[in-house]
Length: 255
Image (tube, rainbow, N blue to C red; front, side, top):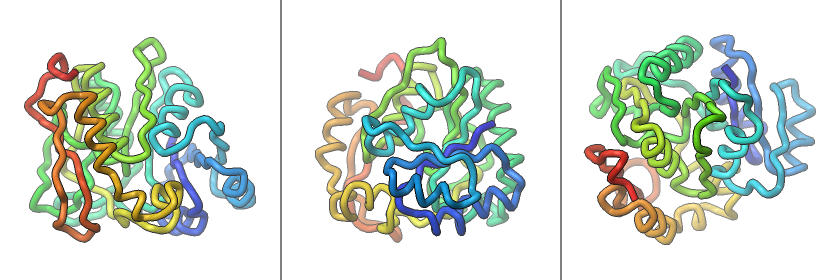
């Protein structure tokens, strides 16, 4: 199992959040992927794991994830993708999850289902959580994702900087016939963090949230029977366009 953490301009944040969580549960094989020489030089000075400078042609979080799976990873690797600002993972009863055990059990489930991609939802509200697994097309947060690498299968390549997690959900579901989601836990993280990350890489929170054109492009690509958009105003995050996946759709019905 190899933990892969894309990070942009968040050295202090990654040390006090995601890395602190991983060290708490003795998770090893930590790999941090940065996209600038400045970040590489700064992160490399710290004893925080294997630092990888992503090639310049892979711009944005979607492309970085594609590089990791398709170019950097080895065949049959088990990859855990994590955001760099995760404080903990909580279950539906509010208890903190032992992430090392959870990661290992998730890959067992992927193998049992003969599937290659999965994860958990983003919302840690117990009202929306259940102790259940699903293989339907349901949203899997980019905060924590699991990939079983199989180089014999068709490559999954996504270059979006926003909504990339939805696109990965769709692409893996269409290719493999399903994705695994566990609905009984969720990460505690600062959604739409303006410091570093996607907002920093894109040039500010306004550009991060200016996403309607990207949403329309994804809908045109996969069809509105697969994915639709809506204006999201509720919750702690800022108002913005968001996507909704159709969990009833079958893989063969996706454009």
